[in-house]
Length: 285
Image (cartoon, rainbow, N blue to C red; front, side):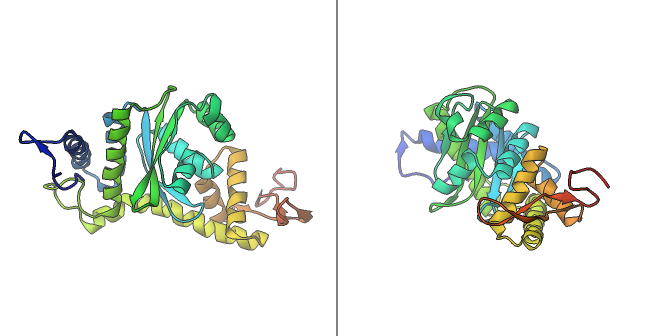
């Protein structure tokens, strides 16, 4: 959403910043109007972000509390996988942006400081064809409610004008998340049902993870963070997402069991994460 008209006018024309914000807002509003299914609006907004910036893909993740996130939208498969990867690992630029409440710009995940800062994430991201990630926290007054994550398939940072545009995109996406009104005045108002449907799928994944964490807590007699760590470890080892592991736990196809007499490094029970019908070595019995 564009801000109120700025005080600074030059020769009867709006400031460059105002024109830039207006261009971003109109592009996102147009993308939303072109979609007939309201559930596809978030993905259309992400695709519009890519058209506005020199990036390969974009995603928006919403924070649902300590350690729990959900992907609201993604422009493509790689963007979606990258968002899930950070959630599954509990590490990466998006987590740093949430913790700091400030943009985190990783311009080279292939080598150097960025690769050392998140070594496992960087390795996996490069394996997806991602060389740079830019995470911008969403929210107001320093309270981050999620992140806008942009990725590039080549090494390099954003220029100053492109970063300014990215921040305007971030502001517009924040508004879309926090309001039932459209991203630009003059467009049709979004109904409550449409807004609810935008996040329906994401909320479903979010709820599934919370429910599965509760079950694993009981199975292992651990706290929520430890339970989520177990699920993340299982997902990472198997090359899956936390949401996929959560669904198996809820369907009672996967049960985390403590090793008899075994303890992990934090003093809690060590689990083997067996699926129903699996033997101790993982073979089906």
